[in-house]
Image 1 (cartoon, one colour):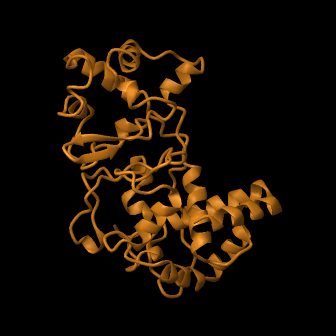
Image 2 (cartoon, rainbow, N blue to C red):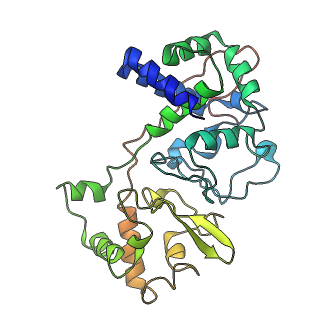
Length: 295
């Protein structure tokens, strides 16, 4: 959806930074808003919990109404902005497309923009917040725009590694050795290069299974790993059937330790907003809903 871009730009011209702050604040409420799901019990925060670096620490997340599990592991939303493709298979080309896919998926929110807008629009508080943020009513484009504004603000780039590069305290010997291995003989930077430690490409991790390279920022606190959540530890990923053959030779045990220590040095749990809202706007149809949903 491109409409929200024009709308948000117009609103920005009216009120500048305060309008952006209003959009982000509204997006935060919507991120924790279970009214976006058909049963009023599931929110974005159900699978992307802020206290778990915006993942859920499950192999694969629960499906709507606990009807089994989804097929893919929940990726972190930290530093999600700036990508050109989304989901593990890269099938979405924008955050707007991700939101629409989740909102309408029968396994995730099972809802529609019409239902979501009707519910939010039934709340006088939400109507006021949308007018303040966009000078526009509750609609598909403004719902998307608010959520995207919040997601774009969730960055985490002040890890010990970043501070060391900026002239702060140097990394200890083990993670420093891991950093050198990562950039050199380990071959890791080939796929996990750049400031976000991802290349934006898909790779065949098993016969016929193509997966987009995930960011390695905060990877030490977003376990379990792989698209199917099948690896419990970083060491398990570094020595699995896909990664083991990639360097010029298999990694030694000390090298696995060094790389693990370096990946742990990419952790930043202080930059992003990890606090849930204290309360949600009043809504007649769903008066007792919980912040973040019930699961």
